[in-house]
Length: 405
Image (cartoon, rainbow, N blue to C red; front, side):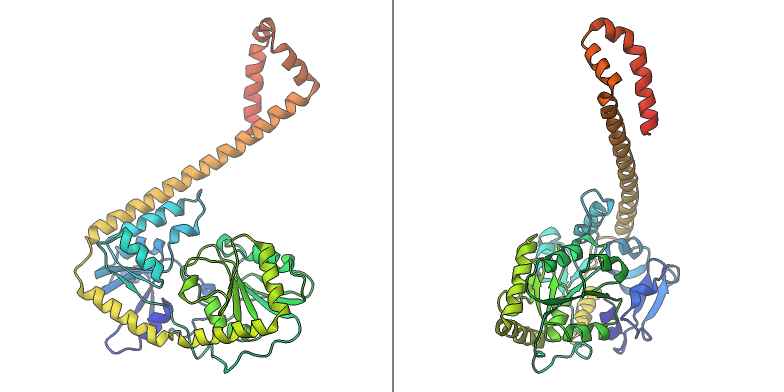
């Protein structure tokens, strides 16, 4: 969304604000140096302004959305964000509930647009694909010649489970052909212990540095579990590399198996390794995929082109009838926020109870294995022994609970 804002801010008659719903972290702004035309303000400053259209860009930013004064409200959805959470995380339910807010939708993926049309037939939804900065990710006339070991690139944060970075590295380790692995991540120190001799971890990188890295590699391996429309393979296409990936949602927006990239089965790490071995051995096929990746990249629109579609979407939202009541939206987001906090506290208490229960069970099992415990088990079948032991057993249970707790 920042890229759209940068280009919208250059248009006459447009005044663009980025409202920060939380304290600014400079690490989140690597790769976005040109924000001079955009007014970056915090939430308190935004409360004093009035907007034609206010757009939420992440489910948690909807908490701030309806606190702003705006004629129309919209939600830019880049993925179904409840899928970013595991089943025992409070954010999973809270993110899902934001689909019910009285907003117009904008999304980058055709599959999300189709799904939202079924979930919210009452709400307008606009499809605006992400563009590519053609000045940064420059398309060469031909992919660089590939000689020597297969040059493999992996991109993503290790700590984010659905990016599958650790599993990707493990799959590459299962190769038998010669290769060179580079991992681009925000925390190279955390990745380094997973790497073999000769591998390297780099980052964080600017977009231009990333483009240079794509251009110096043959294939990007991306085994994501959750995506909207993932950008890294498309960026790699622009620099002359192909990709090996999973059939994750959004891959079919531009990936054609066997034509410009290869798709592997879920959780088949050995299969991923064998696929990479194929590319390492068959350089003619590798070159075929890389040439077709360049053809795909050439047909993909730039950010300037796509920002024209974003401009049209926002103008349409400003002119269309309002979806629901802003007051209703404010009350819904307050309820979602309160329920998320309550649910999170409940999950913390449940996890704490589970830990204490496990400790109690381990103590009981330990006691049963001692000589005293075995004698007690033998006496437990005799009624007289049970009566005599009842006060002692109660005291022992209390003691075990206190120790476990």
